[in-house]
Length: 381
Image 1 (cartoon, helix red, strand yellow):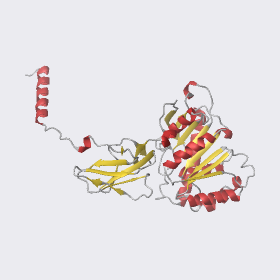
Image 2 (cartoon, one colour):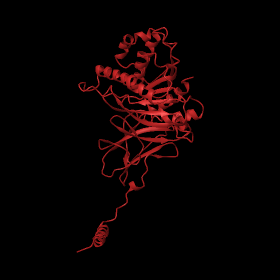
Image 3 (cartoon, one colour):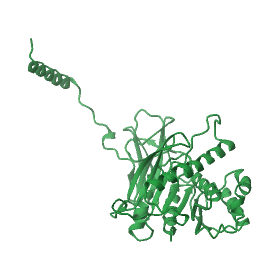
Image 4 (cartoon, one colour):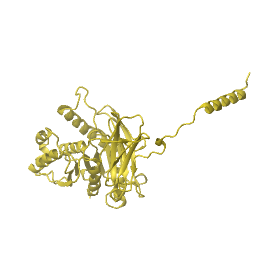
C-alpha cells in the first residue's frame, strides 16, 4: 500500500508525464498584436486576429458617416484598417465579425450601455488635456446603490465628491448630470471623463468645488408597451422625474454635505438627459438656478404638448429672475437640431432667457465632454 507521500510522488510523476506528452503551444500573430495602435501621424490602426473569419467591419464615433468600414485580412490571419488622421480625443468603436458584434480583445477599455458595450481608444494631444488623468488632486468617484421605492428595485448612481471632501466639514452645491438614451449612470464617469474634467477645472481654479450626481436616467420600459411609443415615453419621463425628486435628491441631501437651496443646485443633461432636464426645470422651476441642455430639445410631437404642460413656468414673469443660467448648446450637424430650434422658438415666444452656443460636429461624446468643460465653470458664481 502506498503511503500519502508515495501517492503524492506518484501524482507528481503522472503530471510531469502528461506535460511531457502535451505538444508545445505554437505562437501566433495575436501574441504581439496591438490594437488600437496610434501611429505617428494621428492615424490609428485597429487590428484583430481572426484567421477563420470571412468578414470584419468596424464602426466608431470617429466616423462622419456611420457606414461600417471593412477591415482587410493579411496572409497571417490579421484583419486591419487604418483610420484618420484624427483630432486628439477619446473615441468609441465596435467590431463586427461575420455578422456578430464583438469587442476588440486587445483593448480592455470599454464603455458600458444599457444593452451593449463599446471599446474606447485614446488619441492623446494638446486637445485632450482638459479631460486627461493629470497629476492634480483627485476627487472621489463612487458607485452608490440605493433602494428606489418609485421603481421597487435597487438602483445605482455615480457620485463625485471634490478633493478634500472626506477630511472637511464644508457643505457643497450639487450638480445633477444626466446621460443620454441607451446609456446608464456609467456613461459620464467613463467615456464622458466627468471626474477628470472636474479635477482639472478645480485644480486650475476655474470651477467652484461641488458634488456631482450622475444618476441612471434609463427607466424600465412599461411591460405592456412593447417598443417605446409616445405613451410609454411619457410614462418613462414621469418615472424619471419621480425617481429624481423623490428618491435621488432626498438620498443625496441626507447622505452628503450639501447646500439645499436652488441657488446651490444645478442640472444638465445630454440628448435624452437634456429632455429630462427641460421637463424637470420647467415642471419644478423652484428647484434649480442653473440649467444646461446639451444636444436636445422637446422631441417629436412633445413640442406641441410642451406649451400646455409647462404653461405655469412659461408664463411666469418671475421665471427668468430665478434662473442664474439657462444654457443650450448643440453641434450644427446634430440630427436633433430641428427639435432644438423648435424648443428655442417656444422659449422665445414666452420670453424665457437663455444662452445659446452652436459648435461644430454632431451628436457625439466628443462634443458633450467639451460642453461639460464649458458649463461647469459657469456654475454657482
